[in-house]
Amino acid sequence: MAHVHAFTQALIRCGFNQDTAESIWAEGFDDLDVLAQVSVEDVDAMIKNVRETRRAQGGAAQGNVTFTFMAVRRLKALQNWAKERIRTGRPLQPGLFTGVEMNNAVTQLSRETMREEVHEDEDVDKPSELTDLNKWEIFWERFESFMSRLRGAAKCPYTYVFREEADVTAVTHAAVYQDHDARLVATTLLQGDWFTIDNQRVYDEFKNLVVKGPGWSFVKAFDRAKDGRGAVLALKRQCEGTSAVQSRKAAAYARIASARYTGQKRGFTFDTYVELHQSAHNTLAELNEPVPETKKVTDFLAGISDPRISNAKDFILADPTKLNDFEACQQFFKTLIYNKTTQEKHERQISGVTSAGGKSQKGKSSAREGRGGNSKRGRGHNNLNNIQAKSYTREEWSSLSEEQRAKVKILRTAKKAATGDNRHATSSTISSVTQDSYQVDATDYQQDAVVATSVPPPTPRIRFDPVTKPPTKP
Image (cartoon, rainbow, N blue to C red; front, side, top):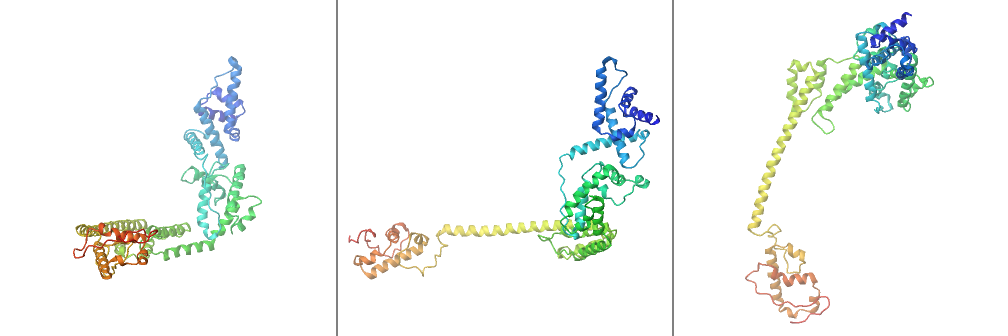
């Protein structure tokens, strides 16, 4: 009965009075193990049953049984605390649920409730399929991140299923962790119903991502048992074994050695150059081969050949602080390049405005010349050698300058004077003139304001309809 007494005392610490604690015990909740085996819904059903029973008894109900809000809240926190201790292999003793431990349990329950509400409708994006084992590094980062955002029966991230260390020891429990989730991932036992359910889920997710690629041959052996832990770790060992590690190291050093920055380009900016170095350093750090800061900086400077910032390299080499800090070095160059690019762009804009202003003034001068003289001066006014005494269409005539029109009139008059009175023109010659050219010839002297004073007035033209009527003499 000692365990019953300890459990009753735990209920009293939750905030229930003696009568309420005994009513809970009477419902079969007489031990912490029992409370850990039921669900939250079962706890709510138990409370509801006690209330309805006492309501039915009316005045005959014995004792003062009340379920206050905070007491019920702590009872559910006690239940969640007990389940977590079972999953992590820690002693299940009601006497430990007191003081700070109780407060932490209530806080953790609130966080889990909040997390479930936030992620209830969240659609977590899955990583791309692994079609090339050489891309394992990126795939693994995405897969691990994907599984860390999902929670299964163990109420913690799925990443606990394929952690490296299988056993949970006293040292594991005593370690300091970044947060509660990290502790759960490291200490949750790889056994029990929660692990069976979560292990199969991990296998299903992993299989869908590797089944169409070369990694399937290393995973297929675990298909029958749906062993997610075995499948994930098998392919991980293959891609991160001794040979694979050496290959990744060599590839990282090669990226550093071949990286070159010659200036800003559309497809390769300074940020791209920095990212190449940082990515290689991250890979080497993951493989337990971190690069010293001075080595990072000297390799970084060796790949820069942009003449605009050549002097900045000497400045870095003379500055012990930046020479021993890759972050400070690349930030210095990034700021310098940004400022120089901005300044050069500003200078080009000023130069463009100045050039445009000169052209504008020149254009205005030309326009003034046109207004002061002939507005059609730019249409070849000096090209008078090609002018002939021929018929022009309306478009051709309007395109001529005043000087050209005047010359046409002079040539026409001279031609008519040389051939005699146009009344002797044959009907065949006259009928060959088109209607458009005839109309222009008949009105051009009236439309044109400039007429050479030395030219005699034109003789009367023959009036006729060039389509239906023969020529008639006036």
